[in-house]
Each structure stands twice: as structure tokens, then as C-alpha cells.
Amino acid sequence: MKTAVVTDSTAYIPKELREKHKISMIPLSVIFGTETYREEIDITAEEFYEEVKTRDLPTTSQPPIGHFVELFEELAKEYDAVISIHLSSGISGTYQGAVTAAGMVEGIKVYPFDTEISCMVQGFYALEAAELAAEGHTAEEIVARLFEVKESARAYFMVDDLSHLQRGGRLSSAQAFIGSLLQVKPLLHFVDKKIEPFEKVRTRKRALNRVVDLLGEDAGSGQEYRAVIIHANREDEAKQWRNELQAKYPNVEFMISYFGPVIGTHLGEGSMGMGWYKK
Image (cartoon, rainbow, N blue to C red; front, side, top):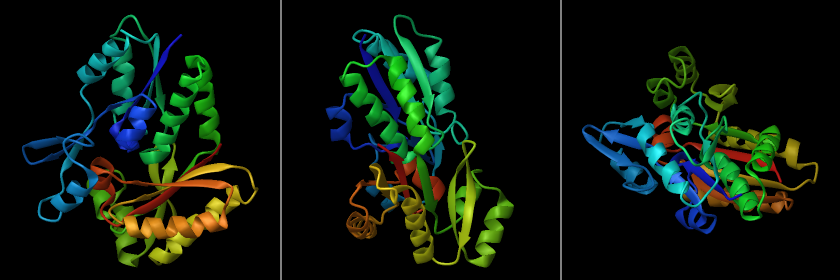
């Protein structure tokens, strides 16, 4: 049984890595006025952060169901099953689009999977699935492993400006107002598929140090972890952070990723985060 792996663009898996692991990607879009750009195809993260300096923030949109149907039908020519791995259903209808499309295609069994998270932590699920598929594991075995990953997966992120999240409906106006009033850098995380405040921290440095403490609570056990530092147009800061952490936690494999156009629309430039899971 041959199993394909699909994820959406908000996993922000580099193109060469997607190609190496044969992961298909379905894009979400950002819309500036009347112009629609598919992220990772029509617009890069770097181009996006330049664009928003001179234009109003865009809106975002999930992939049309027809795009899922087309992709699944194309994969059916070569595969028996597909695991379709997506960002949290609490912040986007993308996962539900995969579920709907799954019921519209024949000749291939579709396993939609809600990571309940986003960005490269979502990407970790896709990479795990692709590695297992390449080894010949069944779709059911792969999905079982993804639920295992979910048990240890963590992600925390800090935003410089809460107004983006509030404007996009991802955080209540009261939470955003209080955060702005107190000039705090709130740490956020996903709870029950939605973005919620984790802790209120006074400065950027303290917020990032708190994330390191949280990583230490898990990685301090000495077990092997895979982690990602995620930045919104702050690559140098992300690299410096990685270098410090690699020296501190040799049992953790670190990589660097980014908040691309769709997620960056809601978090804003300057945001930083980290996610990890037990290998």
C-alpha cells in the first residue's frame, strides 16, 4: 500500500525538503485589495514583510475545496492512501476542506489530520509521516504515530503587537486591549485548537527566556527532541538563539523556520516562537 503525504503551506516546509520527502503542498492565500497571492508559490515570506510596510494588512483565505479534490485525484493515480495534515481547525477551515474533499474522491482513501497547531511544528507531523511512508508503513500506522507526536508536541510564541491577532478574530479585543495597555509581551499557545494567552511577560527578552525554561522542562530529561525556532522576519535573532540553545541542549536537534505570509498576517513582524516534540 502506497501512502502519499499532503500538508498545507502554513507548515512552511522548505521546498527542497518537501521535494526530498515527496510531500505535496496545498497553498493558503493572502489577499491585498483585489490581488490574491498563494503563499510559498506567488509570494515568499521576505516579499510579504516588504509588501506590508507600504500597504494595508491583507486578509487570508483557505484553499478552495476543488483544489483538494484535484490534488487527491491526481495522487490516486499513484497512491492507495493519502494523509492530509493541516493547521489547527480552530483557526482555519483548511482541515475541514480536506475532510469535505475526502468524501468527494474515489480510488484513494484520505486520512485528514488536524495538528491543532501550525507552522513548522505542523511541518514536523508531515515530515514524520513522509519518513514512515517511505519505509512502507501503512496509513493507519502513520496516523497512530502522529497521535503519539501530539502527546509531546509543544509550541509557544510571542507577538510584538496584539492588534493583528485581534483584528483577525484570533484573540478577543479585551485580551488585546489589556495586553497593549500593560505593554506586556504575552506568550501564546494553542489550547483546544485555538490561540490563547499562556503567560504575560514584561519584556521580549524575558518572554524568550521563559520559552527556554519550558523547553528545559521537557528536554532536561536528556531524551532526544526535535525543535524549531520560528521568526517573523528576524532571521539573525533566530540564528543567535539557536546557537545558544544548541550548546545548552545537545540532545535537541534544532532547525530554523519562519512565520510566512498567512500566519504573519495574524502575528505581525517581530514575532518569535519555538516548538518541539519528542523523537
